[in-house]
Length: 88
Image (cartoon, rainbow, N blue to C red; front, side, top):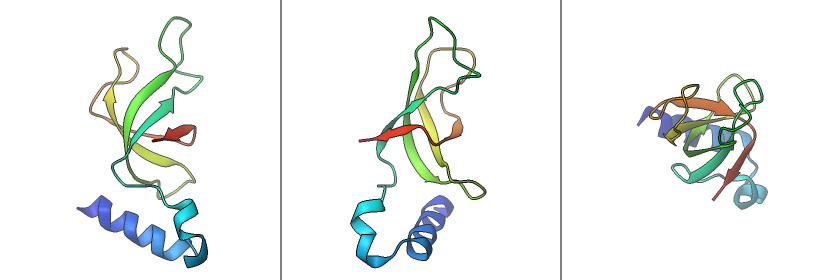
């Protein structure tokens, strides 16, 4: 519930109403997040399946809940922060 309220405040405070539909990201939508270069390995997947939960408070990135990732570096059911993402 806290994340939903922070998300709403972020949208209302930072987005002008004329561009509201262009910049709005749906809370809870499925996303594909690219793995950071520091955690990427040659034969591992380069994309993580996640759910968008909120905007990061201290950076320009987004925060995601990891649904599925089979490798040791990033565990499922954790929260990550990234800017390199594709929204669905």
